[in-house]
Image (cartoon, rainbow, N blue to C red; front, side):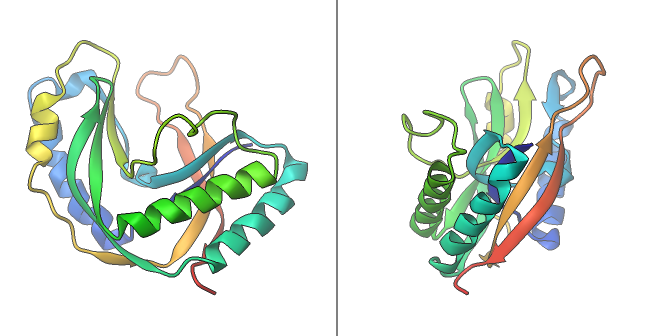
Length: 190
């Protein structure tokens, strides 16, 4: 199974972001991008890649421990940016230092369970973002990131850590998106 640990924004926050993304998809060139659907919006904390079924119980136990060690924290979706001209993302504001510590803990949980991909995050610091679109063309992403300037969603309290199963899209079918399934979640601070 292809797994990752994530923070999922609540429904009302997703609805707010939907409005901002609707404005982005109306911009010239938006049809050249592959937009992430609402059900795919999340903040990845750690990506584990392919995990054998027999490793899942230990990973779950370690993630539950990590969740207990971290208190709930405040977060909001705000602004946006891009990774080169490959990805358009929405950013985050709030208790980002707390979120980074949680990301470090879930990365370590995966490492201790033997499931973290070698070198996945060892060469770069954690940068909380929510992927909105991917670019597989020469489309300039600057107008899309500029359109996200000033966006500030409603703050919410992150209260749980979620383990997600990612199913890649079927090859050869244009416009198909990955499918994400919530496998387990653990309350923070309990």
